[in-house]
Image (cartoon, rainbow, N blue to C red):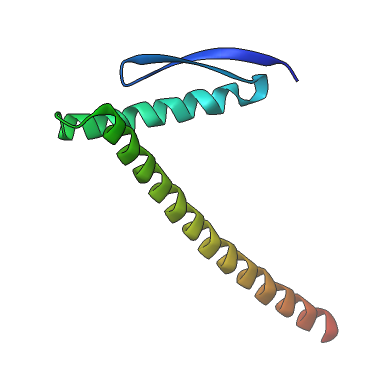
Length: 97
């Protein structure tokens, strides 16, 4: 696994990161998401300090992540329930022959 350096621009500042080559695309995507979130917050609160903007962005992204996890858990439960019902129907069909 080779390490590479990438440069990202977040809220008009450049940052350098080292990452595995296979993680490059997802890290760039994460930086882009963070940058957009921070710009949205800054556009709505022009007097807010960069530290507070970063904290608000972190809170918003963490909240999105927790909601997505909860939704995924819900879908996992639904899928498992459907698979269980299908297995029961399959077993009934096999034993009734």
